[in-house]
Amino acid sequence: MFRRSFVAALGGAVAAAPALAFGARPRQAGVRLAPSYVTALTPEAGALSVALAEGAPLLLRRDPERRFEPGHAGAVFTEDGRHIGYLPGREGRVIAPLLDAKVPAHGRITSVRTGERPDIRLDVYLETAVAG
Image 1 (cartoon, rainbow, N blue to C red):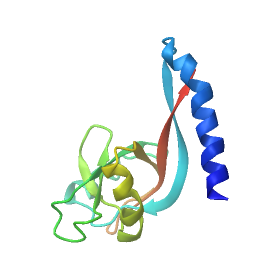
Image 2: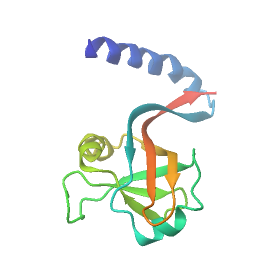
Image 3: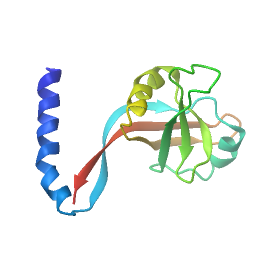
């Protein structure tokens, strides 16, 4: 079953290749991988949570130097590069090998709770270039 899905996706990529080769500007689209949340929020994240809005993009990067779960730590950053926390271990185990393989991925905020116990929820996406 997985093989069929992969071949179908590959066919779409091959179909888009001529448009990309002739200078059509790709736009970023994404395949939703999983819902998640930001854990180990930085102190700055608590203050930022008021400014973060639903739908805002988040950057995902590997952090192999992190003391906890160094084999699959996925750091979460705002679009302007401010570190706000990490993906939880379960999602980190999935996304870390993809980020290591240079597969572009990003997050998008689905909800923000401010206050004494801020909470940032997000969806994790794998990026795909689409001619447009």
